[in-house]
Length: 288
Picture 1 (cartoon, one colour):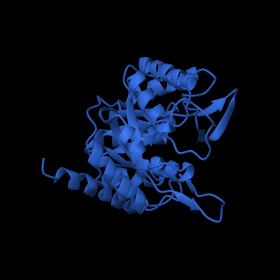
Picture 2 (cartoon, rainbow, N blue to C red):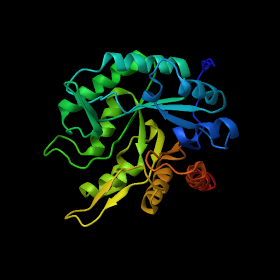
Picture 3 (tube, rainbow, N blue to C red):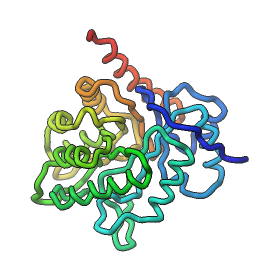
């Protein structure tokens, strides 16, 4: 089977999509479920060929697609991995996704790769570094990318910015778009003790092109509250409330349901997407 090349990208539907995960691929191919769009991790298609490429090529004919990166390590003290960036450029050319995104963090240095997305110091030096890196990626791809705010479990002392100021300034200076992860905002607000509404209000509305929602895990019997962005369960009620506040602030935005561990039946993801679609529809129904 050959992998068809997408003929072009268009605007992402302002609707709810789901992450395309391996257990659901055959059902998506066979049943063409009613979902507005799909997202997959960019690194899943870094191999030159194989069954996933074959399947994604067919799926791309029927669904708008977002490629979401987890390994570019924009904030590393090392330079960008040229091989990684080249492979990303190749898959972007191959699939012509409607959106391309990466995390605003670091995860590799000196040949060592973390199993998690690690936080940046919110300093002017770090800000200048990530702005330059985003610019290099956008130049290499010939298109705008989105950067995502990440969940964190520790933070550096000091700094020149709050987290929300840092994210907003990185977007403003680089000209990239913003993937606003509402679950990550809520997780960090509990872990670090800030008001998530302040964070939301600081986000540059015109730059927000995608929202992520996911489930977290609460760690009990600890000295301080701790939430883990586990992507292993349904979206929590408090996160749904914050999402509704985000849509009230920003207007309807393409919204993705993420689920990466303990992956349930496809119907569960579609039900979560329907919940998000209900929030979007409720906002659309408001008088102008």
